[in-house]
Amino acid sequence: RKEVEQDPGPFNVPEGATVAFNCTYSNSASQSFFWYRQDCRKEPKLLMSVYSSGNEDGRFTAQLNRASQYISLLIRDSKLSDSATYLCVVSFNQAGTALIFGKGTTLSVSS
Amino acid sequence: DAMVIQNPRYQVTQFGKPVTLSCSQTLNHNVMYWYQQKSSQAPKLLFHYYDKDFNNEADTPDNFQSRRPNTSFCFLDIRSPGLGDAAMYLCATSRGRAGANVLTFGAGSRLTVL
Picture 1 (cartoon, each protein chain N blue to C red):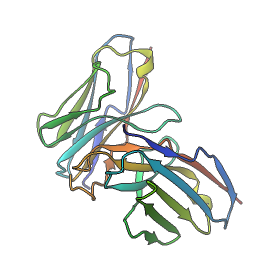
Picture 2 (picture 1 turned 90 degrees about the horizontal axis):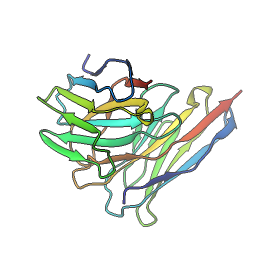
Picture 3 (picture 1 turned 60 degrees about the vertical axis):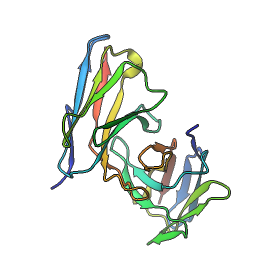
């Protein structure tokens, strides 16, 4: 079973807010995890990979909890330009190529 | 610039009339993917090629076929499009290294079925 579940959203926050998204996955053997960002009517683009030890890229922090089979994305100091849909992606085969997307969480940042 | 190029960007077809969408890449990536994305839904993996090895998802309808004649090109054939097949079709590539399979997407081909 290949399932990736995300918070339904939408999340509507003011500029400067901190917002967190969660994502759960069904296969305990999954090895690769990513967050992608998709703007309206555009293709998805990599936001960040998610590593076991957690990782940070500027205002964005990703965490992986293997025991509970979830990953998270934290966005600090939200900007108007962060408004987009955030997609969780998990691999479901040994090669890491069966990459399954969650339904996405929509973020709207307002001034 | 190295990239993933999809053609056509917009395709209109009639119910039941076969359609072929193409994807080319200059990244020399081992893996090529086809995803279907309907409005307000997640991209759904249809199948992928790891080099010449074809990997079909269990729930991909037989109506969808793919060909990869060489490293650079991959095609999506929809044999008899139905109204429910109207969607954005996204091609993506990746290197094929487990744990580092970052997807690079093309701009997509939007299919309309009349």
